[in-house]
Image 1 (tube, rainbow, N blue to C red):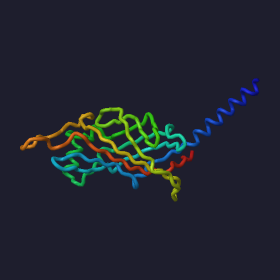
Image 2 (cartoon, rainbow, N blue to C red):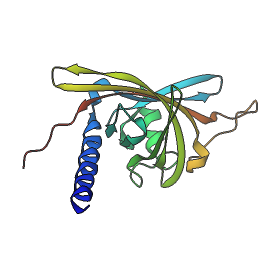
Image 3 (spheres, rainbow, N blue to C red):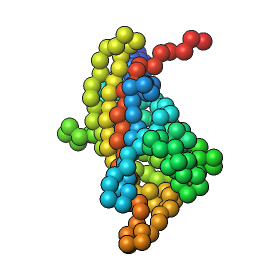
Image 4 (cartoon, one colour):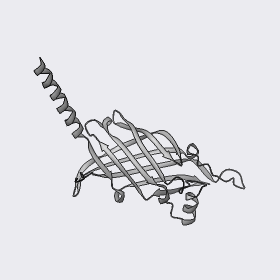
Length: 198
């Protein structure tokens, strides 16, 4: 009986270890990824992006629920192709980058319903933490010259006021200069992380 228990325990440990091996760890490739946004300005949509960010994605292709994501964005890297506007966005009116230099997201849960995936986690922006849900697509995994690569895309809408970014201006003819909702688009290509040599 003892021998059988030991065998069952060894089998369970082996299965657990094999399950962990199914998941791959990827590092976001900044050159082939983008973090973009758009917001209404009077009667049009102004687009921008963050140019400095990093992230780690643990992806289990056999059971996506075992996956996780961690992303850090440097707020000072905001870029809307207009230096004056970018400086205003970095100021205390908006992102207040000297006080809040980073925007971070840490996943808590990944769910799958049919072919739809949802990432749930905590977004920390402008000193405010909120739980958000992000619908995303898995574009696939392929072998590259530097190892396996994985692609992901996501789109979501946030209300900037939820994160204490409230600056606005009333127009002479009525209405507001800026909208409250910000559309976020993420396109991430990540390369398989290399084991660090001790």
